[in-house]
Image (cartoon, rainbow, N blue to C red; front, side):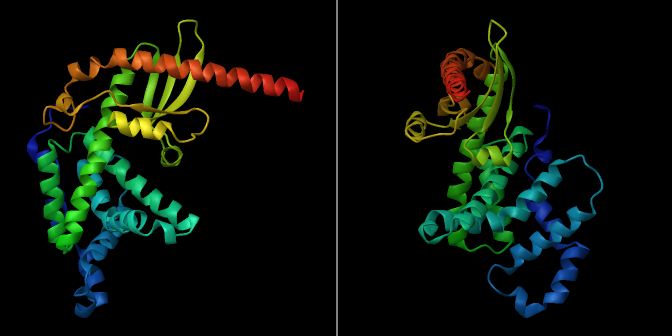
Length: 286
């Protein structure tokens, strides 16, 4: 991670949103919709989202800047909020397809937040929450929507920072060749971090870990049936480890390597059992 960013370079959501509302793309959409349509509750957020979509379709550079990530967040925000409300309040009335689509939207949103934290666009929890509140007010979200979103944002940021801290600790843990953020599909299957590990005898293992911010949430998640190769773990970090920051200091992260050495040994033992069972099953089939 780059630790030299200035406060000016960090979370600039409100400034980015303001720039979009002054853009030619935004103005063109507004002129087509007319004043009456724009006065509808929630209209402005979707017009901004569409304007960003048009802007990004014209973008040629493959390099993603801080502003690009801020634009992606603002663009998906209204769809994320809709999906979050549906999953929390109307899941029993939804089809499997609708639930999957909503989960995909939420997961894409979460990964944008995760990348922004990883790139140090979020310096502190308070600054991040204040910035989100400001941009939602600017885009005419209602007070109840903002409060709902703030609570959901806090939960997302809490989860993402534990994932990043865990990933960093894993990458410093002996035997781990690579620990990296999973794809959206793997995330939906229950894996936050994809781990490549080699033991002392040179045997290679590949597995996924679902990181939980608390011991109790890890315990509850472990009670559910999981796909082969997918495991659950508490992050190993308490609130005090973050010291009011979004991410812990490097020395704190490195201090958790012994915890992950033990956790990986448990996972590897389970993986060996799984491999052995698969080989016996294959042998009987032959």
